Amino acid sequence: MKFRGIGRLRKIRSRIGFRLKNRVVVLLYHRVADLQMDPQLLAVSPSNFASHLDVITSQYRALSLRDLAESVRCGKVPHRGVVITFDDGYLDNLTFAKPLMEQYQVPSAIFVSSGADGNRNVFWWDELTHLFFNQPNLPESITLTIKGRSLRWALGCNFRSKDKEVSGRHWSVLSEQDPTPAHSAYRDLCQHLRLLDTTEREGILASIRQQTGGDCPLRNDSRAMTRAELSDLIRGDHIEIGAHTVSHVQLSAISKERQIEEIKNSKQALQEITGAPVTSFSYPYGERNHYTQETIDIVKRDRFLCACSNFEEVVTRTTDPFQIPRFVVRNWDRGEFAAKLDDWFTQPRE
Image 1: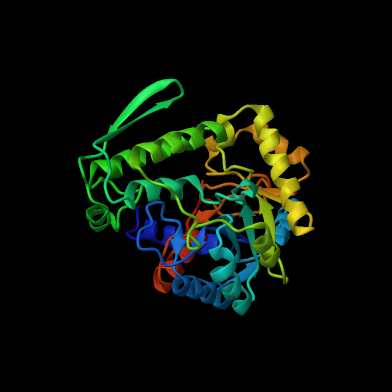
Image 2: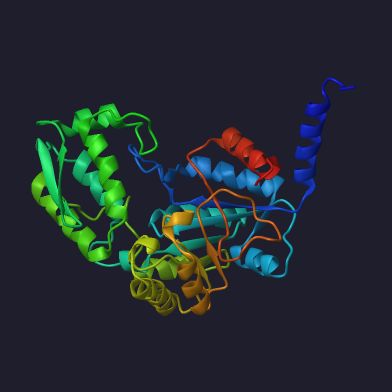
């Protein structure tokens, strides 16, 4: 005999069971800023970030990544812990995120691409956004040679930047449709540039600059931190600096020798800048196909204590400390963020 509602009771019991288990959610942020256009969905507004911190401190246990890694290595994790991490090393991590984290007494790990510091400390995806969406006009098309192949993208004739901004203000690379040919070309080029090593990628960007008549000025609202600013970032007790390669390259797309250079040189540069040991690493892009077992072995040999990925799972006592999963945070208000956190803690994971 079957009783009606028994399945629902089992589902409720399962959710309660997962709620009671010790598990930690690691959050992945990139930027804390108000942006008019954010095609990569990297920014959380300062007001929303403050509300996220309030939810964490009032309902969960805020942990440092260092403490979490030590717990995982010991085969245990705290109950309802939350760890905040940032990738890339944008200036707004210092100007907006750090003061708020100090206000709420919340620790964080900020993974920095060490090669972004310098005369042109703008990330390639931000430069591509500028070249496609901040120019007065675009040519009818652009032609690029990538990996020995000549590729052409139609952009539309004399399509004004104002029109692109209006039609694409809420557009992102996750949108199902592209409002203009320029948006479609931008999306496609993001996939191509991600797979390139530094020299070839810079050559492609130079060609795009030449064909669009654009340049990428250093802007304080979208650049990476300088060496001096990184030194300011680590003052205090709330922020740990981690390595994120030199040039934010997809590690699975380059040779073992280049991976060793990117990982080792990033760690050394950041230790020289901060004067502190760098013991954590974050794989650029971070999905499982963006790094390999060879990559993990290199990270271990370089004496990192943990490494963060970018696939969605909770952390438990059996989590691999060199593949710590994270949940990407979007620009959610307090209610939506609180609901997301509750769901991540209670939903069963494979």
